[in-house]
Image (cartoon, rainbow, N blue to C red; front, side, top):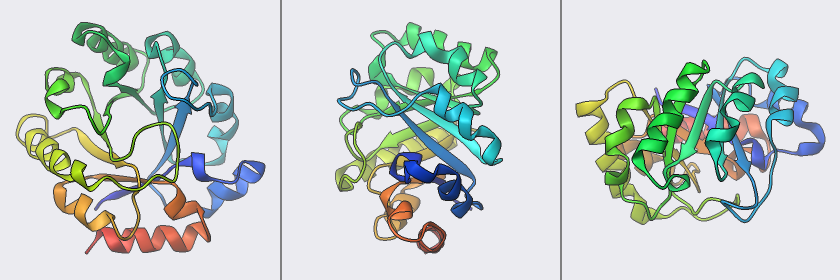
Length: 218
């Protein structure tokens, strides 16, 4: 079964507790951390994650869209992140990324790799052995509510086929413009996890999450 990972960025921050309660039943909670440098937006950091950690048992995936993510691994583990996902584009060398992925695991979390729409899948094949999750972006990182980029679907399929053959324990997550309309193509391409923000939190989150789950089963 495909997992649903609501993106907290699209929730109502004036009542996060209520927003989280409305999505109970989701397997994961996606936490978009932006620093205003790696991407042109600023969101939240470890203090917010720590503040909501006791509200739910959902797996927390901290998606670090930040420069120098290796400097903050311990902070995001200590605040309650179960998975820490870092961007390939944050690193100048494969070796530095390997070191960061290893540091995440040594700190007690699972390690994720994310790639932007324009980044070829081949740029992460050498480090997938250090990862537990691969996140393929289907929008440009930095802002919610963007339109799904259909041209990325072949890359999702390519990644899925490679992972199934070489690293079958890795989960394949897709983030960006995911909705009941776009989910079927993403699932057919091989996604294990659907990250969705506006499609869940705009309106009734419980109803929207059910619609997305049903669409993922088509």
